[in-house]
Image (cartoon, rainbow, N blue to C red; front, side, top):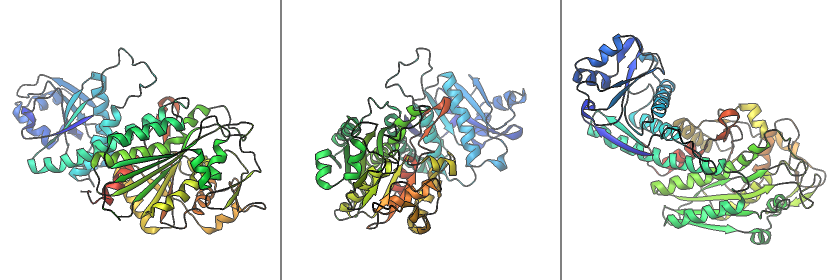
Length: 498
């Protein structure tokens, strides 16, 4: 989607659709008042007929208004002015985008209905731009497009009152555009089926990305290279698959030489049947989404490249399949990780932590400033938090605040979970340094505790995105989370926030 900025007289703006806000009891937003004056009161007269009273989310389309250059005007209800906050703003925007989609409008001009409570111009434009891009997303890689489907919105323009505001709005739109592109990439990768999106396919996409950006390099480690490094935990998972595992390593060089990089590690399990501890058949198709952590690394790297962020970034994606086979992991097997620690595999469906632990050990060589891993790791996190926030685990208070603040700003929220030593004993094993599961109690926490044993050499946080990486049911599909959070965090680390 293309984003543009326009200032000046909104009534004289030539556009297929001008979007104006109307508050409760037919009170016009500032921009709507100005346009109404230019139209000789046409908007007020239209509202007086009673078709729109300003109720939140209601819409009314008008055509060929006198004194208005736009082909059509979409009036959007914003609710009570005193209650117009971020949530109400997003609801009004969503209603407008849905109406544009129904009408097949491909270009529109959005006038802010006054800034929502708690949001500045930058945040309001960011939110609107990212929501607009999400509304236009279509997955068509393996599906014939519907012949009668209306075309999606392609150009979304923001109207600002002054040219000074236009500069800040333009910056916000540029940031939103990059994040939206990263989200779309992560969604595409997540939505692809497992027979297409294999570890080898992900490696090819990574190579293609590096070829398009001068500051981005990629290294693909095959199984022989991983074996030489001693990645016994990761390779134990891939033994059950005919698809060779890959370790994908992005290196983005946007900062100064010697600047410590931010390292992002994402679980890239392109399909998870559970191995010998096989999953139930119901909804197993959704296990193609088990690589959404890895997909979010791709998305975040794309954001850095698009914005030419002045920082150094490492992205590590351990990628494999987890399938039952005669050579697959068995409950009771013991494997040796790259760190030298041994692991008793009590459940082969707890494989994500096995591929992540070796990737986390590998990340040490980059001497990172911080390491953040993200993984669709545990169903227990969904039980604990539902599908609204991602679970955040870390003992680094400063990093916890940084991630939490970035998530709030990006509307991609997290909720901190405990990572107390009290839980570590659940991973005790009679036969190895640790077990790969800690029993039924606190499953998301013990999974994070397991990973923590491989992150002693650097600042680290873990995001469990099992509940947020995709939607299930009739709206099934990847969400692209937590790319908005990661994009915001990288923008802030680069010193480019508002």
